[in-house]
Length: 202
Image (cartoon, rainbow, N blue to C red; front, top):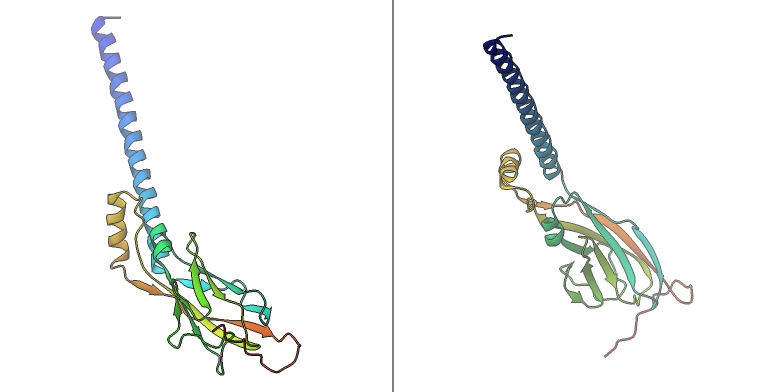
């Protein structure tokens, strides 16, 4: 075989291998684009859904002047760690005729404030607990809770993905869950029907 023929065959082989590499590269790039598009769409759909607040145990029973009442509150629909850090919780009294302690704040309760024996404590995982410190009145008391957050995109995503998400989602705004009710039943120590008012600590 002549040298020229050998070189020609080698040339054909190299061209073929190059075409294979280019084809594989293009296919890989196409797959990467498909994966990116699916990921952006999936994350965007999560941001478009409403957030909800769940009370795992909506009915709690405690004895008067016993241990503190703790009601867990879990927000669903938060996407980023930043949202879990910034979400706010609020509790209002629904039932008429008093509350377990006798001094629930008229304007409702928000986290970070201890008011008249009530407080909302937020945990590191984005959940919260509504605490009634030693209820001193017997009865069935209904409360309503909700959470609110400003939607924040995940900071760990690269900028090009954040830009794609902004295009897909549009303007990020505040999200507020629908109120959810829960009941705290406080039983009198004598099992009777007469309310007992906790003595003043003053």
